[in-house]
Length: 261
Length: 119
Image 1 (cartoon, chains in turn green, blue):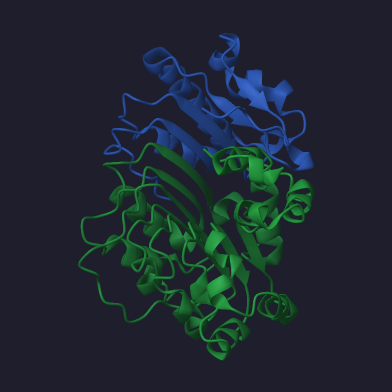
Image 2: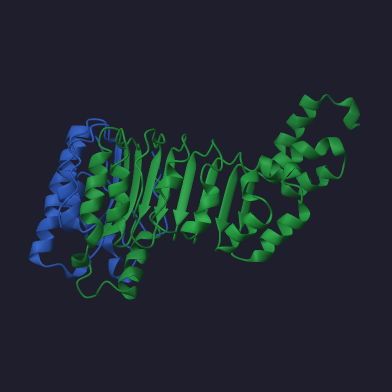
């Protein structure tokens, strides 16, 4: 049956099933001709968590990087450890096979572990970094089409970084959640040539980051259309010091904030 | 507690702000954008049941400012209630906190867990 269908029609049928993983897996078993299009949807979003077994399973299943479905991945999330870098070196750059990624999310990675991701995909438009080193500006600037940036609880202080001659677009949204470390990050952002052009800014910040966020919002003034700000001044919680109970109280006030602006 | 300066954000369409009433008010006062379509605020900090005269005055200032936004921009402010028990019953206390806004029927209050519609 598949041979009698024009490939364009077959693609349309499979595309209609893009969010039905069970049916897509069944489609893979129908014919070899059906496999490429179903892979496009089955491998569109890939997550690797801290467990090394995920990576080992991926490498065992797809030993040849040239034949890896990573080509189809548009959204890649890695919550990892240095094991990610080690694994990448051990297999000749398996991370680099994800070279069509559009949305990239990296969590809990140190500076060395971020190296394989520099310039990973020229089509990256969205980058989310959580609990990583703040030395991320080389990484940010390695994606020329980057529009949306999210920085969440970067740990430590950003250090040496060369201002790029051609900055990324950064015309979409900036999501900033910092707890006392925003200064070095916002300073680097404000140093980008051409200034900031975000149209959306979401920020959650505390007393020690108030000035930095003010500068950041001011830096986006020309293009800013949607602003979502949660400022948690110590004076609003006078009975609690800035400790875990304080943060819990703040989270209680912000977690039901609702959909993004 | 210095407010944000939004006077140069002339394209601003939507502002969502969660903080103390005083900070929200002083930040709203800096807005010059003629494109503003939405204001959503989430006051937190001192619960309104225990407010002193000073905090009560801050709510009155917010009331006057939000009425001005209605007059000048036709914006109905959306207010999200704090998530803690101390904020229960805010709806009943609104006439005392935001008298003019309540009298005109301009307050859209959202309780915790209920997301207001997006623009």
